[in-house]
Length: 162
Image 1 (tube, rainbow, N blue to C red):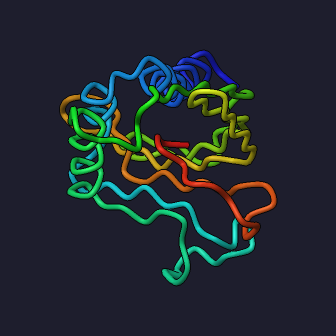
Image 2 (image 1 turned 180 degrees about the horizontal axis):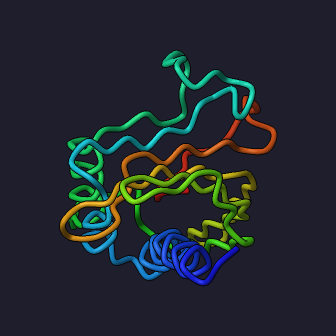
């Protein structure tokens, strides 16, 4: 890989790392600013075995408007399901660039996600596939697909974003 390719790979991986850091810090408005107007956040119930074009059963399938509504709920003082306070931690492995050109890129990142609320702890693992697009403001997330390990098993509610 040449120096330009290595620099682009670092730039793209930084978008994924920044997304996780903003979620972990509870900076949801800044996190939302990383997303493109045509955003899709998708957690298919079937995990990696669910086809890309299948919009059937999902743990989450949200466009930009639904992401904005969820962030507004997270800020609302009467969001009782968020009491006691909910916190999360994303542990990311190195992102692998599947495709990249001057206008779009796709990265796959294995992760472990921990969500804490009071004495309750939720641990999830899987792979996130980010589709990024270049805009005038820089790289934006067009789609994030989260394929959970052991998808389809009963899960408690996830309060934040995997």
